[in-house]
Image (tube, rainbow, N blue to C red; front, side, top):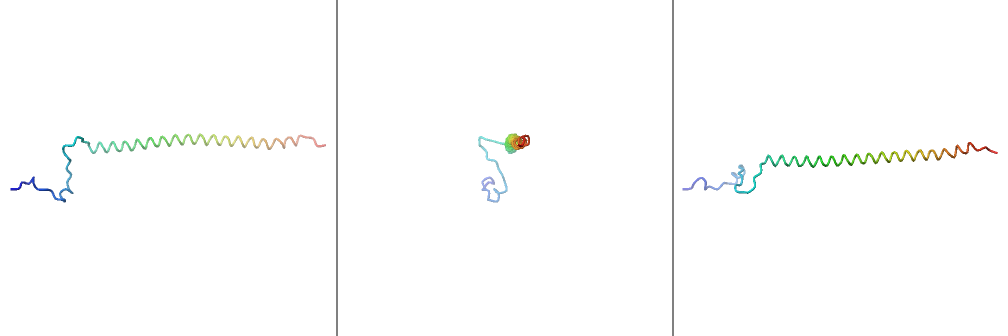
Length: 94
């Protein structure tokens, strides 16, 4: 007198089947969740790359400024060393 619906599933039955839980208030499509997850990952990656790109541009500008300062300092130093020699050559010896 047992009906087939009253038979309890065994552990093997549960391992091979997936049944959605009925009666919950929230229903999400797996495909939608997958697309949203990938979109979030790509958005985070894009923001990170833009941040790195801006930081690299700032760093390149700073390095260029430092190279210019070094060049100007080298020219001043070379000019200061050559000025005493030129002055010494122009003075008459007695």
